[in-house]
Image (cartoon, rainbow over all chains, first blue to last red; front, top):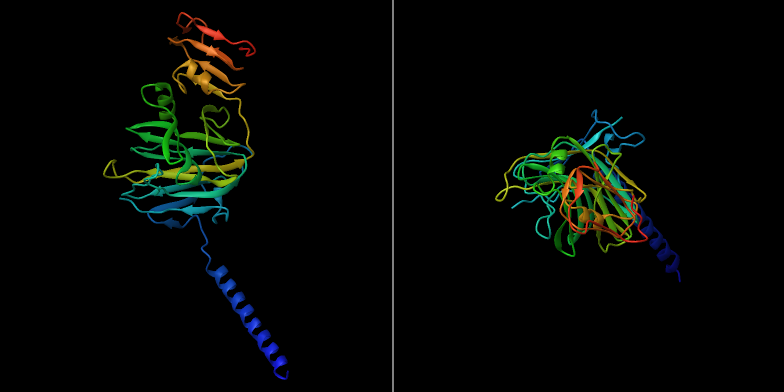
Length: 83
Length: 252
């Protein structure tokens, strides 16, 4: 019985450590998450390059390729390879 | 500010999305759900076989569709192709022999527009030279889930079958919008070589525009369409039966 509060405290401490670890991992993941900067994306032997060119869009269309950062909806797939 | 996305490959490329053999084409994809319309503006032409770029709808390696501008054997063309249940199939192409008008049309321009729609399990391909007037190419039924991937790609084959050169394609925009049924104009012989082939591919409400020439075929109209000749004196259907018009399907 005397050990019970101590054990509970130990559990809380362990839980706090786990929580802290999780937060640290999450922060690190955010810091090192691959940011697809379209102006620099080069995967395998391919380039994905947006340009602020003079080509025109149709009236009323938003143009997402003038952004320097790839919208998170996009996934770049470049298996490379070749025979 | 307008911009565009360029996808390029260096040599040796050998990047394709072909049947179940080669999936090394670079591409950008995103999730799409339900019915949709994808359209894009593609800038630039290709100069070697087999190079192409366009709209990709992707379920898995056994089920995907490509609507693209391509170069094959030195000429420019539009292709609507796919792999369905692991089997490669050409849904629509502009071969040099049967569609010379299309070849000329595509060869002379640097910019084309592509549109691919999904309504249920039916996928439809369109192309345009100005982004406003769309020519219908083909329908295809493909059993696909509610959610799949759609995007843009570049194909660039290399040795040993094809020449090895770098390639690039630029897309001015990529737009996903609610599915819509376009009142399509199907041009004979640009899109389909015969009037009957165009009628078979048409949906109710479409217009079939027949260029000057003599067409040696029997024509059966079994749906509500507009069939218009370029010139009443020089657009001729030459066959014993001529045009058969089914009741309940008025024709303009």
